[in-house]
Image (cartoon, rainbow, N blue to C red; front, top):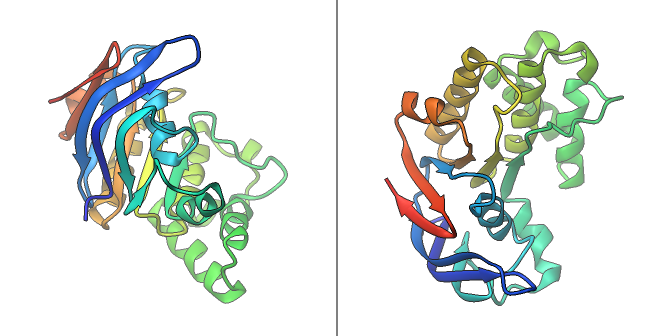
Length: 220
């Protein structure tokens, strides 16, 4: 089963603006891919469709076996537990430590105390932040905060991880390290889609590129 399948999908907003049209592609299990395109091309719309924040106007979209044109709103929270999202501005809780930011995400999912501790410790090792577990966000560098945000997104073992401009505030060296971390997560079986406008970074990392231009998708 493909984690996501687009079939002749179109998304129009009120006022007749067409954000995406004629989109047909699949995301493969364990794949690491880039989503590129200029501002206003449709990248954010593409991600929102996958997360169920908006619905297609026409065509079909299947996410983790769910038909997004027919999925009832009350079933969205269950689907979203299987989809991790990493935001550009981190969105960490400022008065909670790195450890607590990850733990809270698991608590919302109803994970037991013992299992939360095991998963949080494990993912902190993956992102190499064991020694910074009890630091507050303000005590962390930008790169460390981004790694906490990634850890929080993947702690629940999502099948699909969406990263929206995850390196937009980082220097080139840190950006490459974050991409290497996301690739490591893909190697564990999670499908990872990274939206970025940093074409120099895309050239340095070997991955499939899904490029959006004026609402149309080209796969490179």
